[in-house]
Length: 217
Ligand code: GRF
Image (cartoon, rainbow, N blue to C red; front, side, top):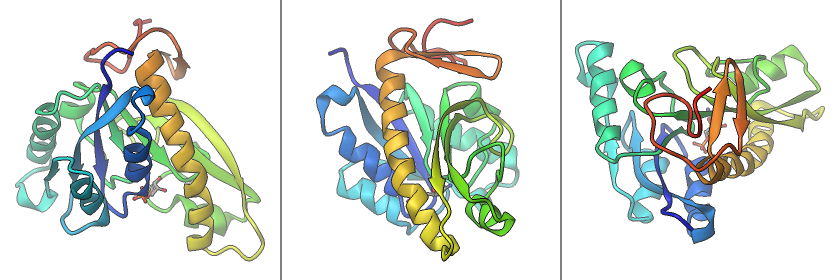
């Protein structure tokens, strides 16, 4: 197998999606390994998981910078230092700016079936709307709020007695599996993006400055 794809994972909370990636990458045939974990806040379980796994971490807090543009540049530089093949925003509660998005392919995961219920409260909003099926979405990040090209989705039922926490946990069980599957496929098989359509399996990953990990189309 060729060299494992390098992942930088960004977190803001409990980091169970990060943990799923860490667990998957213990198998060399997975084809990817987490080389660093970044966060926008300190003292979170996601950073503790990285430290436990002996993965380097970094924290860039927005409030430490005078402008959003300065923070955008700072976090891009921290990510770039680890030369990632893929950046995974796994429960990272910030929109990344052009310095990161233009330099690396960035994957994002969301606990709803986009384009329904984007934003920070996707589970709450779906529940309040009364949907009977929701789910999770793995997508390429762009400069919008959960607007990037969709890579994969899976449905999850909403049950009559669900509250936000119960439903989110049911979604996250599916989300972790889907994220691990898609990250592995992307690094092993490459991808192309044509308009909003993402095709997996178009050749081994190569480092590019755009969102394509295989041939450009
Ligand atoms: C996930 O459901 C993610 O989609 C959402 O926040 C949750 C993060 O969970 N944005 P964890 O930190 O990976 O446990």
